[in-house]
Amino acid sequence: MAAVKPESWLKVTARGLYCEPGDFYVDPHRPVGRAVVTHGHGDHARPGNRAVLATPETLAIMRKRYGVDAGGKLDPLIYGERREIGGVAVSFRPAGHVLGSAQVVLEWQGCRIVVSGDYKRRPDPTCTPFEVCPCDVFVTEATFGLPVFRHPPDSAEIAKLLTAQAQFPERTMLVGVYALGKAQRVIALLRRAGYDRPIYIHGALQGLCDLYRDFGVDLGELRPATGAAKKALAGEIVLAPPSSLTDRWSRRLPDPLPAMASGWMRVRARAKQRGAELPLILSDHADWDELTQTIREVGAPEVWVTHGNEEALVHYAKSIGLRGRALALIGRGEDEQEDATEEAKA
Image (cartoon, helix red, strand yellow):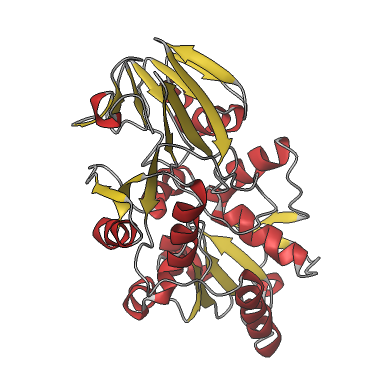
């Protein structure tokens, strides 16, 4: 059992989760003096902090997106290394969400708390897989924390895309993807399925695809969609931010077949809202079975739930004899919200 009560030193505040003895915040949603950041998505990695501790990959993503506003002092910490901050031992374990994503392990006076950040349990060729870390308190996301969310195999969703491409060789397969993580994962899954033709990408995706390559992720041949001859894009796969499915940019494509890659495509209303003729259920978050599996595997007697459908997962934790708590942190949104920044640069 933990030597001290976890809520006595890791607290929910208006700026986010605050570690009092270390005087730092985990994924603060407002600028703070010292931030520990789990990954590069905009609802977790905010600009303007005076000091940031994160993995080297996450810091590179923040520099790419925010420039000089990424933070005053950017301090890299690789997986498995420990850093003492005000007597609190801080380390990172892989989260399997996107490149550089990390669970934050906090240890103080005999108590270990693991803050998952966003995570998934499925193999992903573009990032280090999730690592189970036993603890006293597990702070888990719950983006897809309802039993209805059970994601199909990734290979089956990619097969749907390739089948549509074969059936409609005169149409462009226009796939809506989030700029960080989803774009690179869809590309890698296509390559794993044996697709070796060039893949065309919207300009808003280029910078982060280049960054992934800099960290050794092989994406194969990518070509800019903007400027390509219209006829040349017939029968090709084009990746673009979700908003591009319905805006003027897509008009340059020959009879585009709009697809959308997201865990939310399980919900028909979401697919319709996005204008997706071909919904592809591909998520970078754990589904219900993976969330509950992870809670069981970490073995924590206490589970704190945030970022999504909190109450259902709290109820599950209590049903198997654990203490459960909904944190109701503000400032957490879907991954796609941050794509507006990248689209504006394209």
